[in-house]
Length: 128
Length: 192
Image (tube, rainbow over all chains, first blue to last red; front, side):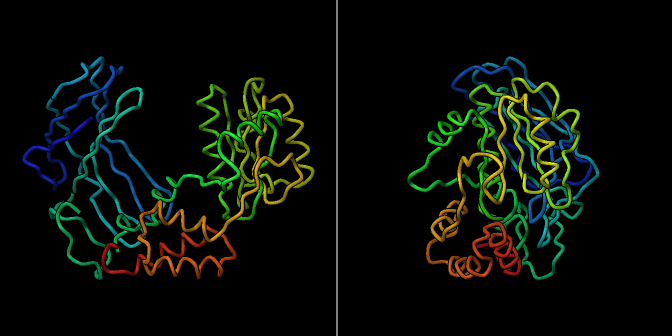
């Protein structure tokens, strides 16, 4: 089990802000490392794009632990959604070798909300 | 509907798992491949799941400890990208070619010559005949139903009825059916 908790259950961040969180894991077997990734990816009709912006690595971790961490967010790209494509920000943690993973999505936007490219979408909650 | 909520988004489609007819399984496919000395073709019309099976087969061969090297051809790209790398050090490598029908007869003969030292050769192609047939893909409404279930489309949903109509319209091409369903969902104001 890997669980990611963003501080204060915050789901939206401004460009350049720091995202503070903690990772809790309880693994059935020991692993070489646990890697934390700050990344964005696209979902939609076409080929999926993905970009890992920053990583943190805990080598030779114990089988269970909780650790705080933080990433400084870049100024862009903003979280957005249209009919054909959405851009989604997330942090994820994966074990090496890959056995377990955890993931937490968030919004990166100057307005605090995902940018909607189509005015027919209903008003969406902050956490998408 | 936002792209991220669309149940037919490409990231979800790419996770669909192969669904064999009752007479087939991964074990029987791998056994047949072994009997064919790792040279065989997955055949079937467009949008029938050949690439899906091929990609999963590559993963399963890698898990068996075999090295694979994959190239894909399309109507826009009919040549092996970086052939110097693709055909280098083949002795312990199974070559996997998706879209072999894109090679004309002469190019196919050249490809066979260049790959003769490979530990195996597996291709997808529309028509049988280039290599012994490993598996023939065919689409059925039942297969479409299975994919819709994997995509969490509830039984009785109007999308299921629409999918059935699209299946006939696209002559069983599942890729086109799923693309059309994406477009239909994208016009809906709310997630399903």
